[in-house]
Image 1: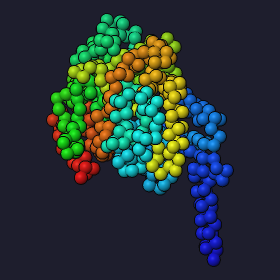
Image 2 (image 1 turned 45 degrees about the horizontal axis):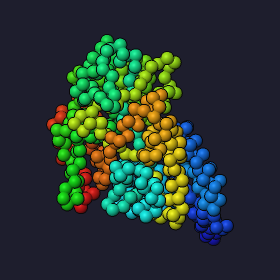
Image 3 (image 1 turned 120 degrees about the vertical axis):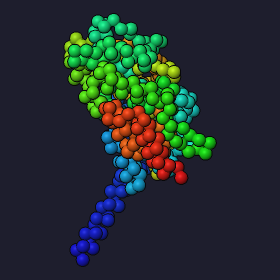
Image 4 (image 1 turned 90 degrees about the horizontal axis):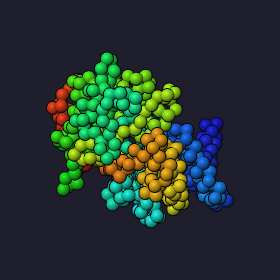
Length: 426
């Protein structure tokens, strides 16, 4: 009897909790849950401020801010989708959307978004969140990979300083790194704890593609000559030239900053947003600058996976969720989000803002690269997360460390990789 009573009480509590956490209230007010992955203090503050501003002006549609984490977002979303507990508005990255979009977990935004927003964001950015015939996310923030350089070191060496109009080629970059090395110091520190996206996105500058879609719509991996330019440069810098620090190959971007500040490395390839950490952590008097990444046959082209805002297919208030996204991504608000995250907005109007075109902290260098950003090579490839984790990451790590050669790298990426992808394309 006591067990039956307890079970009834638990069931009642769960039902009440379900009602209170849903999208509506007895007074008719709608509540939308917005899961944000903002993590830097400025970014969190910008997102929270915008939510407060929306709530102040929309008493009938309240947005509840929910803090998520980049470290666990994929598994967390998958669990919430399958459990019917997904937030209404979802912050993620475009390279994480494919399986969710094809799995029916995300709403097609094609007819939900206003024309203003559709026309403000370039087609190349929309392509990052388009799967099949539908749009499953609004790309709103993006970051190119750049070189953060010790200005004093470069000036003393006499090397040519690259610009977006005259960048270094990959061959020239290798020679510069060699010239900057010596006496226990390195020309470059590659932080490649997560080597796949960095390698693939930079490889677009050399004409690399890696993933090839056939007439039947199926994708296969082919590691051609153009795909080898960037990996070979990194490998040769680390193992042949000794111009790249071998100890940073397994490090994250933040891990390289103390050594950079201490004068161990002249340059570090990093995402554009790392500038905030540098401004906060660099010792007084440390002179640094932002340089464009090297260019190849593809020019300054880079692959990017923009941050996105999506709507859960199960949300009962898709129209209101789309209206909140439109508010959040008004040009002036998009600028606030970009400044908070130290990234670039995708919106054409926001990119024109003077605050994003100043030379201070390298903003102008970043905005000059915006037109060269393209969808990451793996953007619409089903099974990419598994291919990346189980095949590509260990293969690239072993190649960069010198444990395997180029032939074995190719064999593993192609043969093992295509076996993984085939399971998702039957």
